[in-house]
Length: 125
Image (cartoon, rainbow, N blue to C red):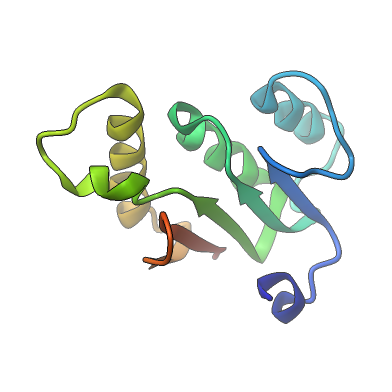
């Protein structure tokens, strides 16, 4: 639905169900796209990958997505663990820190959607 509303023609997905499959580490692939002149050429990005890497993926995708484009990040509530101060495993801490960083990031407008495991929609300014 978001892709249709946005009228997105160029999309990138980090994690699941990709059509143009590229083998290798996602961060390396994203860096390669940037080096090959793909900056600001994508309308939409979706992230459902290694939770400890969310911040790095976000920084790279921010370079690849155009102004007004969207970056959607899945699993931001992490089964409710991010709000439980007693849960401090490395994945939960990574997602918690990522969420806190997004709240302070003036490069994007954000909306966290508390459906399922949570999704944050980021619109690049």
